[in-house]
Image 1 (cartoon, rainbow, N blue to C red):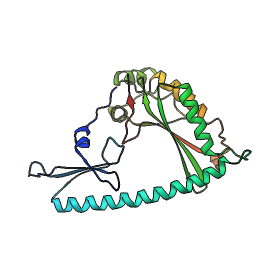
Image 2: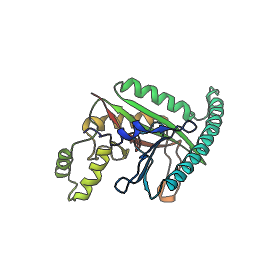
Image 3: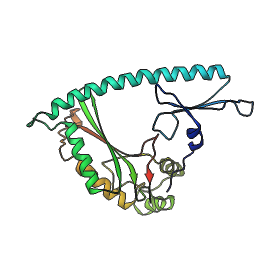
Length: 247
């Protein structure tokens, strides 16, 4: 199933703010039938993070300035975080015999292995650090085969898999994820998922093995005790950058 780019016309006509990279689209001749509309896009996004209609052009201009100021502050924070991460990563990577393999090194090895085993796909492997934890985000960005099932295939899966009854709200939620080209993969229920093709399930299962090769999980949920080397998340596309399927 192919994802429709609903905002291509506005995105291509948008003006780029040089200080933040935010793309600004607005109708410059508002009327009662065509009010003061605004769309704001992040630099590499295909969907807007803001899509609003304002009663006056003055209120719209004030909102734009507020969002640009927020983007400037956020960019400064990201730049400072990037320097901090670089210093930490250099320190970790310079240790030839660390007690635990650094997440940065694990991410690098995961990228290389995914590229070797799935050469016709493109992946994003991103690290995240926070208080008392670290996280590895793995996202399928591009694929040369259909990852999502069709609606008819999903209905057949429900009918034959023993899931029992379902209603149209279930189908609406699933087809909404498919049409927008973005979903979160539950790594514990890959085989049971009604959304993905068999080829995609096989790939996700192997990706899970690759990602968790240097991980551990000594957690005990019953006693509220958690002990992992790092947490993981698997995604197909992102909200602002849906999965791209190429022939």
